[in-house]
Length: 237
Image (cartoon, rainbow, N blue to C red; front, side):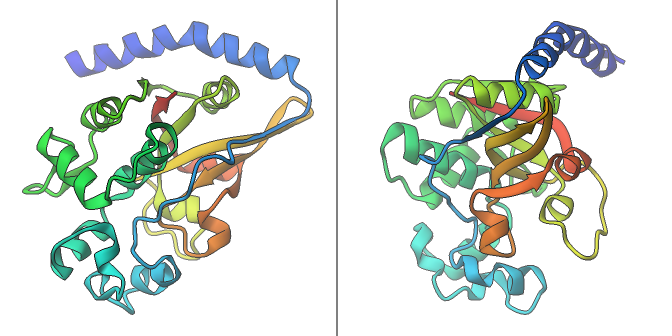
């Protein structure tokens, strides 16, 4: 009951921000923004093998470049490879804003230690610890629920990037969609395209894109993004 009341309260608080975002779209006829300064980071050591790993042709712990993320063993690298989407998104921003080259293994360790991932239950990444990790490297963050695509786009227009919760299969446009829940994966939204006052596309870095085109500055139609999007995210400045 308390959880539902909190959700309702968050939804009410989001209404003025949503109105502001709609007004922004009405004022904006055509616009394309892409934060080209943000480097891409894959959650897999060898991005070219993502398709084969996701299809089960190659075990994640058999990636020949498993050491590049700083893990001490193949098994540890393989465990995190299919789980470290949130940290990959965080690293993209930390590399950009903090001008540091901390390893994925170190970031996973730091975030897990503050409750970002529950290894026993195999669940995460949790937003508060992930935001805390980003703040520890000097970034400003805001966790947003009921974050509509309109508000997300306006955040990008105001200079932010957004770590967004999506369905991994839908966002990749997989041939076989076995799960339609709007969650389960995190991507970094780094841009958008507006035409005739309508959001046409989102531009994302997807840590688990099957092809380079679906990984790095991938253009995702707004309709597909919306169908995969859980309206949850971390706005990062």
